[in-house]
Length: 270
Image (cartoon, rainbow, N blue to C red; front, side, top):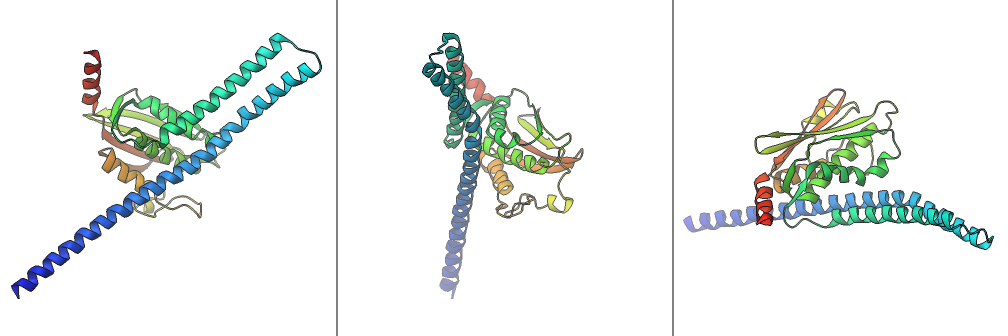
């Protein structure tokens, strides 16, 4: 009898362990799917951002060709067109560089300037912003942070995309404000919009799996759930949401790990 009970407990423990492993594997897959969805959105944005410089390059090269064919060559005008083409190519290269930086998974924490990385994240969603009158104010301080850079970008990008969608049809004073403060050894980053806020009934389950505030039928409802997991498991922090000043605010709290940055600077100085 005792042996049977022990065997039952062992079997139950093994089953529980398997279920926990399966759940972790499923969550890891969901995180990967969310990352791929972000990459898909970014590819669309890159295609949009490239339209203008490609048009400029085409126009500049056409001007040079016409001048040569009409024997109306002007060194000054040609150099001017070549400068325009060079600037357009540089813009396209920078866009691809930003994209490449994002898709590379951070295997180890990195030290980076908080304000600069947020500026880069805003650039990554700039194609969506270009269709709107939304103004983004990045008032985050130039804190140095030592954490997983691309995971941080993914969280911020998710929140910005949500805010952009909430403000997309606001043809008045549409704003997204970002600011940061130090609280002990933690940084609190706030991203607020004036898009009308979130239904109070949804606030309590906003970060649950498959919960969405978006009107898109194909939205998975995983964005904020994944953002919460990244904040808690990768960035050793948390994310919360509340309504304020006619809109929604998302507050990210995470360890700055400034000591690692100071140690790195000391080592480089040595």
